[in-house]
Image (cartoon, rainbow, N blue to C red; front, side):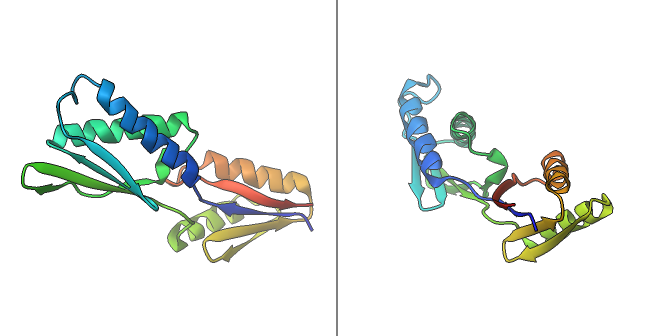
Length: 160
């Protein structure tokens, strides 16, 4: 029986490239000239540091723009609260990986309510969709792409 998996993941190499591009862009920006502003990547967390809250916002927008250029879905970004320590502001930006249980249940309900002849099973942080026909699976893919649940979904492991 044909099947595929619905996952939510990001390419960490592309995130690293986007962080490097943001670092290069900092030296060219007029509003960040002469300001100590840094962007660092530790595993799946990007740390933004600057001298003002407005500059943190500018860094976050630059990072978001570079992620879009590199093809990373920005819905996976999860910025935390800005922290002030002395005269520096910092913010951690985490990336959501995997489909959490409430979102998975919403997705299962969405597919079942659409009356497409497929079965959906939650397997940890991914969903397995199986059906008798490839057309039904493609219809389910289209449905998932069109819905907006705040997470970017990818499809992999397509078996015929």
